[in-house]
Image (tube, rainbow, N blue to C red; front, side, top):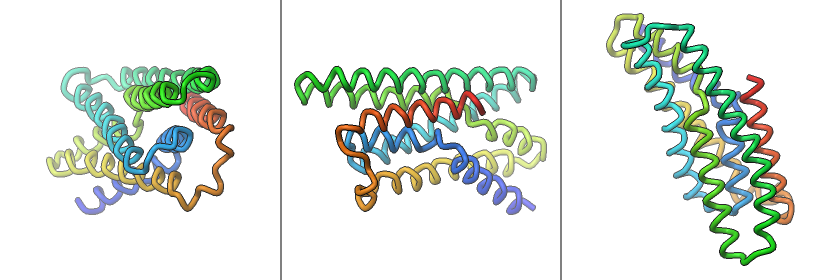
Length: 205
């Protein structure tokens, strides 16, 4: 029985991540647009993925021990989704404007500013962006009365989310896919569009 519950949590984590383009599209777009190395991109992916699931798990733990209010969960989750989506949309437009402005200045300064801006966007979006299924999953796991499942199900869901993000981002930034990248002069537009699309995805979802 435990194996079935845990396998289901792992599969749910994979499906949740694949279905949500906001888990990987912004990372791929920023990495390609700023020409980050695969190593740098994957390190950031692990960091923001862990942040993404840790915040949701923390909220679930607080609700189970302090709040005990499912309605509050829905309000918080809706607020976080709207905030994260709006942040990505605003950031996409800002990134485009900053890129055009920076292109008229020294190359080194432009790269430094844009790289910092891109990293900040990703971290902020994943910090406030919801990992919706993890919270009810933690409640279900706790309700089983099995301590192994109470920890194992959320953990495997979180692990599957991070691993799937890594695979998706790695595929998106692999050199073998270089030929499908837009021309270099259009990379700011590509990044901005990816951020805006991911933002609308969150708000609409």
